[in-house]
Amino acid sequence: MSSQESPVPPTTSDQITTMALEAVGATPNPRTRRIVEALIRHTHDFAREVDLQPGELLYAAEFLKRCGDISDASRHEFILLSDVLGLTMVVDTLAAEVSDGALEPSVLGPFYRSGSPLLPNGADLSRGAEADGVPTHVLGRVLAADGRPVGGAELDVWGTNANGLYENVDPNQPDYNLRGRFHTDDQGRFDFWTVKPVSYPVPVDGPVGDLFAATGRSNMRPAHLHVIASADGYSTVVTEFYTDDDEYLDNDAVFGVKSSLVVHYDWITDEKKVAASPRAQPYWELRRDLVLTPGVRTGVEFTAGREESAR
Ligand code: BEZ
Ligand code: FE
Image (cartoon, rainbow, N blue to C red; front, side):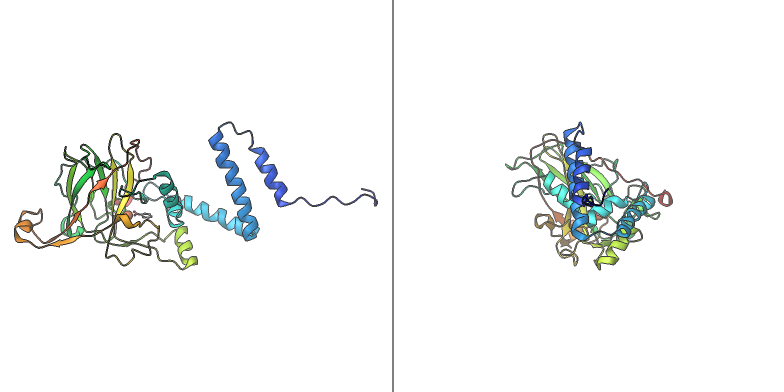
């Protein structure tokens, strides 16, 4: 360069964004192109907005690596990360528009195990007996929006024991304890026994725990019962029912609570009912009908395994 020529201006971050977008502009699959382009735009804008420093980018890379390192068949730290950031609930809510009164989705969580035993109505999911928790009868109907019963619908349900642990991460519980699938009868009815849900902490022994600590947040989930409701001709709904008197209802670590999913349990002491119940002791009762939305029945693509130590 001679002393007369003007100096070359430095490359701007916006120019790099333009180059990166051009590089993926010929992506053959339009959906992939849309997602990758938006990913580039938003991450670059994010870096500009927070003035992201090279050391912070490295920290983020290391954080994600740790998420991978701690994940295994029974632990999925990336799902947990998405859950605690509220991203899972945003995606699930956008994906499942429902009309007023229809069953709304909530978070699947990382503890779902497919392949639960298919049980007859009236069966008890508790295979760990007393230590599992307080007996609870759950009953209701699966209905269409016009009130017609949906026979042959499937409910896949799961919950923790009284210690707040799922069986797949607890060596003290039998395989598939507190998990099961039920089919509705021709009047849309289902009923099963389980234990009253308790609130429990999401795991904080991994990188997501560092995020909780750094943001000073609670890692508790309010007491809930997981349900996947599916039937031919209806959209599959992955959801949870939240106990109405739980102290963490307004402070769920994963933002899963929706008003329509908050339910009330009645304490049953009537002698005849108690005597006829599987454990012959006072119990909780949850009555709840589920209204499905017409659509496509889909499966759930994720399943956890049972932890080595719990096998
Ligand atoms: C759960 O309810 O099983 C759960 C959901 C999100 C994160 C952790 C646990
Ligand atoms: Fe849960």
